[in-house]
Length: 264
Image 1: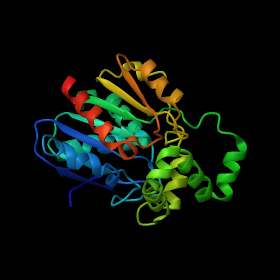
Image 2 (image 1 turned 60 degrees about the vertical axis):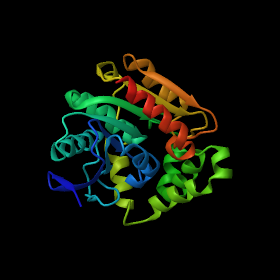
Image 3 (image 1 turned 45 degrees about the horizontal axis):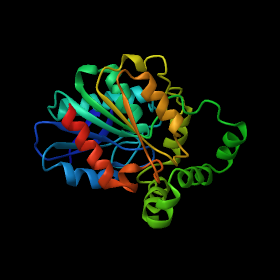
């Protein structure tokens, strides 16, 4: 199984297809590369598709610290090196979108385009103290409630397997651990603290933002902020979708990704 080792941390990735353009799929926090199954099988016929398990997730190592978004972006650059890819189109959902944006800021020559799905920056700002306290007492319960709010009502009713998959990911100690959760929360540049509000203007890659109208994790306003501050970025907002458009409406998401690739 392919992987890179950077600063002693092994990061897993897989590669499918042999097309001239490479797509790099970056998954949400607590999940793994399997969340992109609907996309990899569709796009590997015409593109090279790389899926990643971020450090702390899936088949990658789970170190006690080192969960800054900058570290994860450096992992992506190392994977591109190992896979002998000069530039890729980064497709990132949630923390995957943060990693994609940070890669575009840190190593812009490696990024051909960005599709940012339900993401944001500085998302922990303004978290009510009672939420933080509740998380200290029962982080799994609080996070489970957050996940439920991140899936649209239509998806909860018609596709209960989406929540079942999400719930299984963060409760499976071989996929994601309590130690990784707290190390990520504590890192000042981790998933909740990472803040590039003032440097989004330096992203030069063509960018499409996709957001779900019913996303309770990264609301439309958080995604609109990205679109307003990344030069030339466009945004599309889906009805009856929450945080996981690639699962909730995969056919429509794939059509938008294909159209975006055709413009690059």
